[in-house]
Image: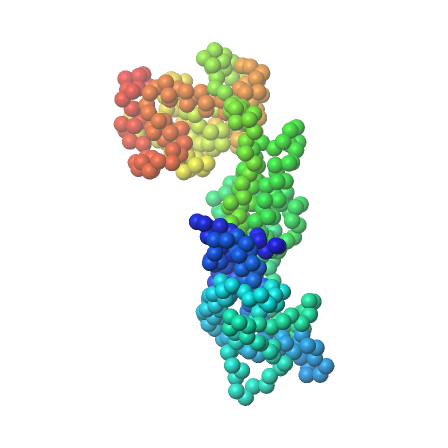
Length: 486
């Protein structure tokens, strides 16, 4: 039976579940109809589900008529469908003045429909007979326009036989529901509600939206349902990576998550029915992905020595080379991210007698990113304080090589090439590897994971991590490393 898809089992009993059409959801105040079918027998549940499906079909059409404007029928050669529609509309005009009355009537009639379905049908009942709602008496003094003529079956429920399989849509009906806009026209409004997104995140959203546009085109936002999002997940699963092979599972999760976030925003704005978009899942990781390691590794001790013995440290030339050397030194001995070092101010912060780099305005990737990082003795001995003073006097940031600042992407490209030429031509050894090396140094220093996360700008997710966010003097020089020459 085609209506079996509306049957679901809960604790050994069968229930009917169906989505309410999108144009009625706002009016009736709900998105789904869920009702017990009053049986533990699957065969009976299927029959009751079919009956309730056709009951609801007629019920929803009546509700739609009660939401419409008056019909403009000239009274001439009226067709039967127009006459029936006008009669149903005139019966419902009294309910237009109040949406609350419509919601109340919806709930009452829905309960009555469910009670009628639970009653076993008689032998002469036919499921292709669509019932009408039990209607109130015709108001006195108002003309009747060929209203349906209900009769009562053995259960006492009003029914009407379908007269035509292809009922024509009444003319002159103006819908009170505004047309739903195309989904992509909402992009700017979505991004305005997320002002914290960076350029890279916005690019990621636009990439996902471009793929999604290729799949669903200009589909109205109100017509989008969960299968559309699942279609996008399948597209990402089967799409080939331009560099060969399938898309990485992390890439799929990110792109699918962008679309689900957008649909969640649209649901919260009342633009689309909540169809549980968040339940759509990306493909699982392959065995190779599950066993794969991080493509970047830390520097070995020999490689670190080779880096600090290279020309940028032993024989720097112009201002640009000196700035590049300081960039590498800061990355190796603070573990800061590339985009943070590229923007960190030259003004240093002192906590008691300990000097710190100030990432409070440039750290943006996580909630823990705005922070102070104490300078180790090696950086101080290399003359970082004097360098910072000269940069501040010029009005530059800490590693700015010239009047025009260098972007983090440009720094990354330049220094990755330098590491390949001066240390090792290894694709797993990059500028970001210095951050891995610094984390190893923190573990070796045995200062504890919570303090290490605080310096390293990792959000642990623990409640205690948000307490005492700023560094205290005791944290700047933890007991495990006190006494070391700074």
